[in-house]
Length: 158
Image (cartoon, rainbow, N blue to C red):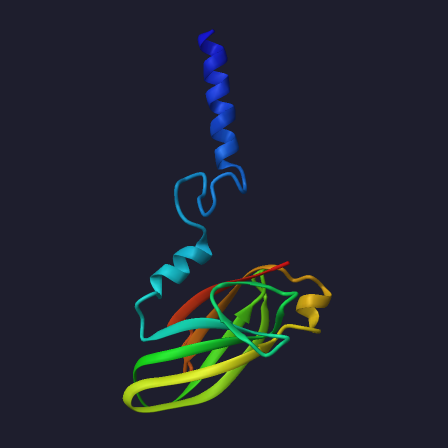
């Protein structure tokens, strides 16, 4: 009887640790690498937000969108401590981790605050045609930096 309970406990534990068993957790108790990366940059010099422009022209803010409704994804980077002229590089990573698209834009501020809005077409693109669904990530770089100053994620689902 005791052995039966031990086996049952192991089966329940294995189910909880299986992919999808406990969202956002790994078997060793750590968060997935993309979640750790986003948390590390949560209070940096830039903040990333998302808005979906729907096919009927409305804007919806959030981090989870249905590709059936989205025409464009607007990626908004708000700079908090930026002074002078700079270049912002934005890498958009597909769910498989590959760079899907890279954007560069000038950004300048006198008082430390600046905003850069970037449109990523979704409707009628490879994203919808090939069902590139899942968690997308955005990495923001300043000038020629090799380490991102901000990282954020957005989910594109059915």
